[in-house]
Image (cartoon, one colour):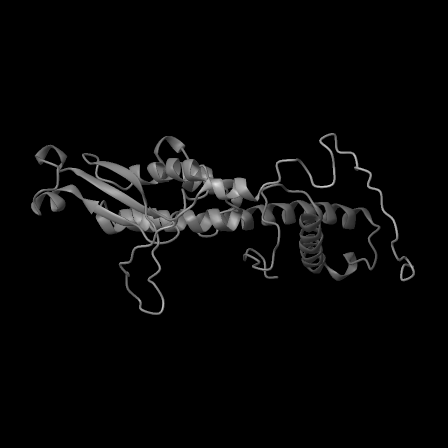
Length: 269
């Protein structure tokens, strides 16, 4: 790998200067620098083995230069937020984006968190407009939802709102069969991300709209108007009951003896 160029094949981009991967990179880089330093010496100074004092000193110098180069390469990746190391994602990007440094209370891995921050920054610079709010909500809400503005609803008449509600809007999330999973965490997260994108003078409500799914009557595909009735009489069940207890058993559950005579048992096994 060329020096001072980010290696895209790396698996570990931690800020810690330790570990197997880091030591492997350090040894490889130090060997390259050590060879370069030896080539700078006159021919009468070149040793074929690492033994003379000057080779040991050059090896130590090469190791420290390699350590410095690897640190510069890692710092160079933090210039752009698209490649910032995981440990700096919050301190460099997250803290600047969210109010008071409050990150969404959701479970992210490193890759998902980076994608979320990049999307949030792109949406933020769209401005405080309804489409930006919809895009921000869409990062967390799976499925359909609707954003309605009160001043537009008020123009339709008979809306139940007046001029005091003109700076409000609603976020309606349809729900079928119950609340979405982790609804409390999602609700708190939505309020955090909406606060960084909405106009400061507006108020909003998040509403979870429950609805029932209807399947039309097959094969007609429409609602059928019909009437049916059912008659039940408990006395019929009483007539079917054997009030003397369980047949052939007394009330204490013991078998009642019967005298039996002249039975043919020739077919029994």
